[in-house]
Length: 302
Image 1 (cartoon, rainbow, N blue to C red):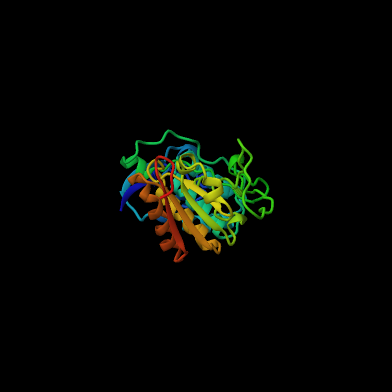
Image 2 (cartoon, rainbow, N blue to C red):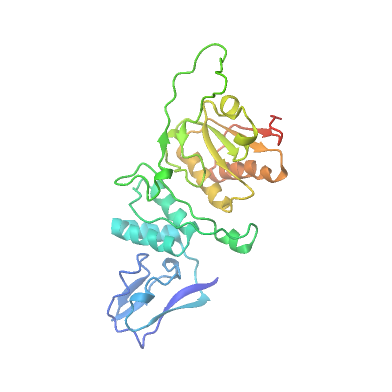
């Protein structure tokens, strides 16, 4: 495949080695007194090494090269310790490589490794829906999880929390006029912020909902959410559906999920909700009982 990758001019390289520490991916080594690119698979082509070369010997070119392999890079990086992991994560985040950043975070989670304190991707203005840029550059995701020393990985709003609920009352419900009780059992709820390793997924019944549904259906908490763990996203406006499939697949793989209920709106574009869930089950190799309920735009269940 043809892609961007670094090139080193032997006539300019003095072998000072200043570029080596700025390549946490491990793509550069000093060989015979010169900096060398030792593996196309480890070079992401973003050029973190360029700014530290005092001789201007490094540049980015476009040529035939093997595809960059983030998981192979992470397998090398984690052996080098926490500072190198941080450098790599922030390198991806600073260059807007959200897909690779998410893959690196998933590698840490899947291998039971802590997510260190670091600066996650900054929020960027999303590309117009349906454009090539939008398909290739999903919006940034701030991951969180129960990791030390900072469980929020830079985003306190995405810290995984279980919300304790009182034991359900027996007998018919006696609502107090003008009030209702929340049935939310965890935080966060937006799939982009959810940590697949969160403990609240253990033996959970999932409610995967279009983010419009709780506003359209007044009885959402009492009739649909009670006793379930909530995940919301929009299959039309959210641009990172491939990442969502991967994250749901990680949840399905890490935990024994008892059931999934999909709550969609009646509008056609909402049909993608179930598609994402089914693709995630396929990717995880899981078959989980799945039901679907539709909310009409006038606020009724169908």
